[in-house]
Image (cartoon, rainbow, N blue to C red; front, side, top):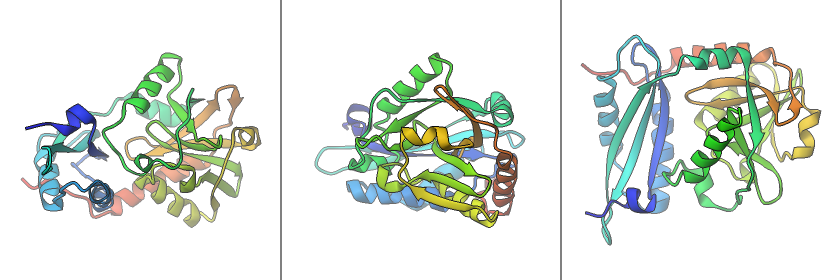
Amino acid sequence: MKNRTLLLGEGLFETWRVYPGRKLPFVKEHLNRMKRGACYFNWPFCEKMAIQKLNDVLKEIPPDIDARLRLTLVCYGEDRITTEFLTHWEPLSPELDRFQREGVAVTIAPFKKHSSSPLRYFKTTCFLENSHILKKARQRGFYEAIFLNERDEITEGCISNIFFVKNEHVILTPSLKSGLLPGITRQKMIKLLKEMDLCVKETNLSLHDLTHFQGAFLTNAVVEVLPVTKIDTVPYSSWAGCKKLLAAYRELVNKENCLLVKI
């Protein structure tokens, strides 16, 4: 049977951080995003099968470690498409703790993405653009690369969303209309920042704005919160709120009704 994911890149994926105790947070939100993508592309999706696959792979993960877990929806067939779920996990790199303490350097990607592309709003397996640019960025000593759209607006990183610190009370992040993935962690962070009595604005941002910010940080489900030390030649101070935001996020994870392995 024709593997459309392998041959054409037709597929979806979601990535989680598995916390000690095999805690898997925000499962419903991630699966809802995958379900929306499957519906958009007219691919079969069974949430019950997805949850069963996640439970099966959680049994393989040692209970005392942090890990990265990926669930992939793979498509097969020609006229009638069928799907299945594949999983992959690996322990988190010990470097991540250092990155969260010391921050990371970021660069601007060498080409742009168009905001009208529907692929921007789903985690598709058509990931070569992102993985290629990320590899090149890391060869140059950067942790992440940020894409611009056709209007030179800042959108997102290869593997993360980005936030900027305007001052001690205002946080800015690119609007979804600029063409970026509506990150699950991004949305959680927006809510937490507001609960910290900060003003959070989703807006259009350009390269000219970079020198007007006091700080910046990246978010995704695996890295949680990473301070940014510079974007190319623009330096940033470490925002003290990153530690508070990370603590609030982990408290949220602890309160979450996580998917726990069923032995």
